[in-house]
Length: 113
Length: 114
Image (tube, rainbow over all chains, first blue to last red; front, side, top):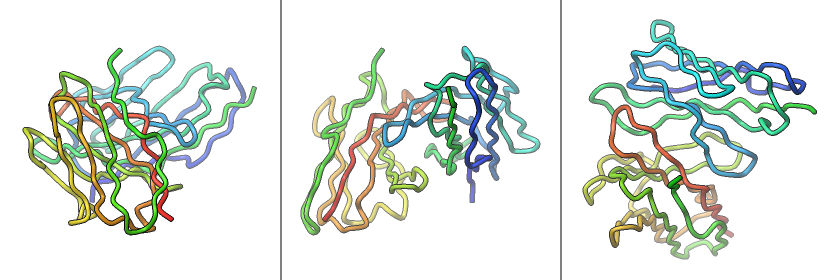
């Protein structure tokens, strides 16, 4: 079954460092989305990358997508303590497929001040 | 910036009771979704809704669950007879279309079944 799986499961860095999180999935997709969740709170959409895109930037975020490897990465540059949260990738069902999102277990990022 | 809203933020109920979770999707969106997240687990899809009918549902979405768009703005999830295992954070989401469209999530309703 299609599944987004992130690694590492947990990441602890110092403020100012870069954080890289990876996501792998199993089936074809239309797009891949990254979300952020502060502890016990809602899901905040960060960025959507389409299957025909290889890289996308938004502020301090950089997302790459390699459809041949079925993988994506999220890079947060110059991290801040406020970036502490869990980060999830979510994939859809591909062209003509399901619009439901399938989420991974997430990477729990801790940025130490 | 428009956002999805959900009420209540927290709900505590007794096992066997009915609960209704409410959502107001973003106004020009056409597709609506419910997801849930049991504590410490993945976010799981429950149901999608378009054009006043369910377009897809997961195996979790059994006969105890129903969704409704009672008017032009609200989207509700009803659990008829709650079970302990229904305790979770329930998220509503909406999108303009399907395919390459962002799904925007609400802040969630934390449901606790005792």
